[in-house]
Length: 222
Length: 299
Image (cartoon, rainbow over the protein chains, first blue to last red):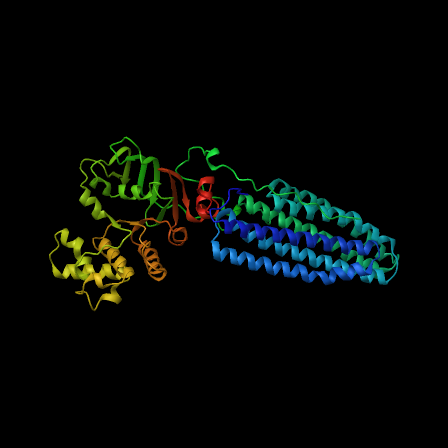
């Protein structure tokens, strides 16, 4: 991140506002994901409902960020790091919005699982969630700090998350094949695990944007 | 249970620009591998037409150097922009390319060479007048002569001794067409050039420069006195002219540099800081000084 200030203070103020808005969105998305999983684990239907309702807030964040970024491009014609910052901030917002969609998916699946009664297998979601939440936190922190090192570290963390998700999904699939327990609940659980795995992928995407902002290197699809 | 990550505080401390001097630069900055770049790749380097080698220049007989250690290749058939803050030496270097600075008694090239198509332009056998026929120039303020449109466009030809009205008429028509002015003035070629709009007068000056069929056109802030529409016409014209001419343009308008030029050179305090494809200079410059200048963090 180029830390020298612009001659035009309004340019700096606009960039700072954009960055703050993305970080605000990141906090809202993190909270949504946390409440979705918390609702499932604590059997709290109200919490699941609020996640679904609050997704609108995240959608609005995404739209606001697009408007801010477009206005910034029109007013200040950013180039170099500034241009990458603006474009990648929009891409980060896109990834965050999709993470929030996965939080909503988890909340919807959680409601269905909870309605079908208790199932101790839901506890296996917790370690996977912890890994996904850590990835998301690292991605947002990397964006905030402009840390390429932290952003690049997400690939290894995500590989670990993928392995854990596959292992858990395999275990649940075996239960389903053996008709052990409530099959419908287990299928919903499989989708919850899948959503958490996707959260990890999207966190990696955010990390890739951070690398692009800071070094202009495009490491997507490598 | 609380999984909400704690975000680190961002440090936005200012860095003292002067405290981080950059090492000496190579003349050419390597282009990023396309596989690793997103919109920052540049055009392949074309054949060089102008070679500037370790040039030093002084306005006061060598007491102080206005230009230092300039080494730069300018490719044929492309538009190259010179950018940099006022006083950085970009216009001085431009005027060195056709020895316009020779007109100043105390001006002197202190070291180095400028070669055009391999020929040293300061060699004893080079006539500056002949050089300026090959290297035309368009100035910041349009400066048509108080003559007719035809006579302005024909001026260079007449100086060269062309007397045939047919040859002159053909050259004037060609130059006015190339400068995208023909359709606007073909019915009033004998009218005064001073009756044209500012943008038309500047295009007439470009026509005057290209009527003698130079190889290189130097432009010193050619649009700084024009409105956006006239500026767009000149920029369109520059894009068309690069098919036949090598163009070097000095501009303070960085959006203009990004629109018209394939390569951009950034100067600061009499030194060439960085040169490369325009998309790289404005997308991902290698030097912090360049980044600070193009992104408006300078001074």
